[in-house]
Amino acid sequence: MAAAYDDTDAFRGARFTGADLSGATFRDCDLRQVKIVDSWLVDVTVSGFLGNVVVNDVDVTAFVEAELDRRHPERVQLRQMRTAEDYRAMWDTLERLWSDTVARAERLPEPTRHERVDEEWSFVETLRHLVFATNAWISRTILDEPMPYHRLGLTQPSYPPADAAALGLDLAARPPFAEVLDVRADRMALVRHIVDGLTDAELERICTRTPAPGYPEEPRTVGRCLRVVMDEECEHRRYAVRDLAVLETR
Image (cartoon, helix red, strand yellow):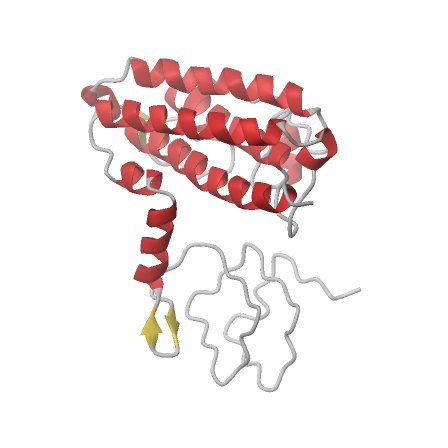
């Protein structure tokens, strides 16, 4: 079994010369200012936040962002949100996109909906994470509910499991697709209720409660919280349709 290095800074500033890193996986890592020179990058896959990424002296950051925007124009709509009406229109778009995406998942066998592609979250796990995101950023932060978390919510991998358990989350649960879909529909309806009553003034209201224990203690506006949720919706749908395309061929 290959060695595993979790939550370590042992390699910060390290130099690897003539090293064989083929087949290595870097997940949720800080790779800022990494320099790769005279190395073989063949069959390499990179995903994450990109900024000033230079490949063979060419900054490819803008190209990657433009291609993602072409494939997923909802990303552009998200960035252009300013008014309450913009937020409502964005949620309209997300509801439509997710309706189509869920319909694709419904045509798959139940076990396939729980299947991971390249160690990424399954479709059911993706929906569970979005339940948590809505609970955290909408119910807790915007609506100021102290413990709004549903037990089927799924935190980001970096969130300590013990802290998740303290919130009442059952990370080890293996619920059926239909049960998760019901919880997810309830959370989406909550966001719809909020954006339907949203005003430009409400966007600027300051929320004082953090999304969950362990998050930075800082003021957040309603607009910022809604934007976080909608960004999660956009990006996780992008991952979901990528993996559905693989699952549909199996």
